[in-house]
Image (tube, rainbow, N blue to C red; front, side):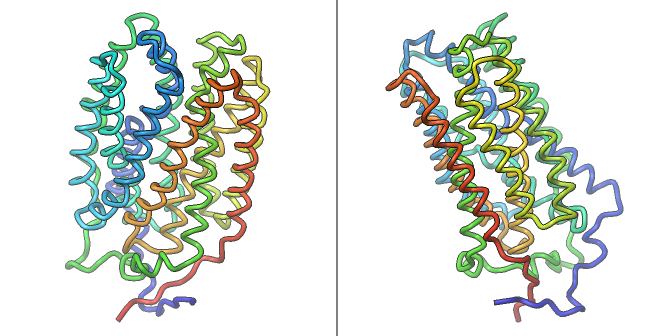
Length: 415
């Protein structure tokens, strides 16, 4: 059913900010996301994988299972975090989550040889993980922007791309010089000393005039209404298929390439290139979303990702690895932009964070499967190639799903 908004309830001019305050929220969100679960943990995991297996004699599948436990915990906890964000706003949720995340990440430097110790820490990281990512920051930013919302969200999420560029080579350098334990201490400190103060100082929603809800909250669908729409399930489906493929590829990127004769330094460079491409993909996608129909933009980006995974299946040189990483990164960054943008356009802000949390559940379940299946495939066959071919097909399927999305609706205000 089409929801028509009366003319007098159209978005007010204040939805497009004219002050520096809104852009300070964006900048603080950019740096907060840069040291979040979605950046710091995800893009350094493959760098720490071999050192952990060498130190404790664990298999790659066993270490990869830690990432799976974190992802599954994210899947369970994301809807609850979304409800808290919709009810209390960003800062009361982001700040405690970021504090726990930083302390827990640093504590990985104290790991023992008991696998349960590793799994327990990753479960804790998963519990608070999405409270540190773009899920919380996106709600704050969306209240300040309407016409330039795509660009604003892209700039925040570019923090993930920046982290993906910086952290893999930094992790490799710290491990080579000081050891993996000290590397974990350094990264935990970055969260607490860098991301936490900026978020506390600047991240907030746009003030409401006389207690009146923001326009998108008045116009948006209730949770139960949104869950009845095909659009929500299509968005969740694209995330699921894309997440299996991309998380499987990026968490094993370094060991995959070094197994084929690429040096560890070049493998870390490939991970950085993936981050750079993700950064560029996010900014490009933000600009495109403000000019073109979002699902078509998503389709094009995921086709590039599918091509990158297909190339990675056969990459045996640094040049091939860099090219594959660049293609995967562009699509990865673009899809991250598209999801919150589409949720605000199809459903408004009324239940935005809760809906975002539910899509993250789909993303995280798939993200838990990808790395573990990749680790199992290697332990069973000694190769990643056949599985990467299948993952390329899955990514192409998620691209096609974008084309099934309808036009953006207009919303009527509930009586």
